[in-house]
Length: 219
Image 1 (cartoon, one colour):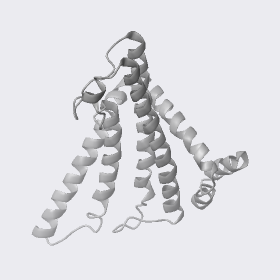
Image 2: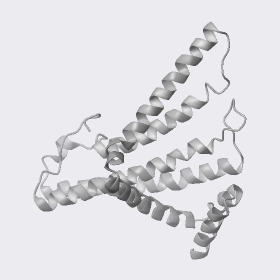
Image 3: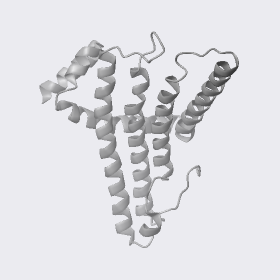
């Protein structure tokens, strides 16, 4: 196992997409992926600590930027197609990749605001210890889910890079540049999960309310 981990690290340092893709087929990728998921989340927490603006606005800024860019591309290309009878070949392939970025970064935002399905009304009637247990279970599940996606999506990214997959309608815009947003987004989810759990632990020890109702956009 240790040898396989060293092989993966060696492949990454070689900057050879084919070697990386081959190395990521071993089972050691799950051990390394788990470490990256947790340590990557901790790294983002450190960055958030020293750059509070990012902690408050990172996900929202990415979501709004990609959403506006999608809207601009579609609006301009519809006008060009039906009025000027011309259209960029990439105008129908780039927006879905931008939507991919917006979606998964948005998932991290909703983890931050706890606006995913949390059964708050049901948990409010539980004893405090059981409430904290449920919140801890949430954290474990989010970390586990992120771990799986980080590993599998990184394998997809490496495979795309190894095969030089180019976005349809372009000559040199590689797909893996956009696909890499998936593992990065789930590392963001890991960071927000750890951040929320640490806050839950602090509230539990201080005797503060553990379960609060939330809504999308209530940041």
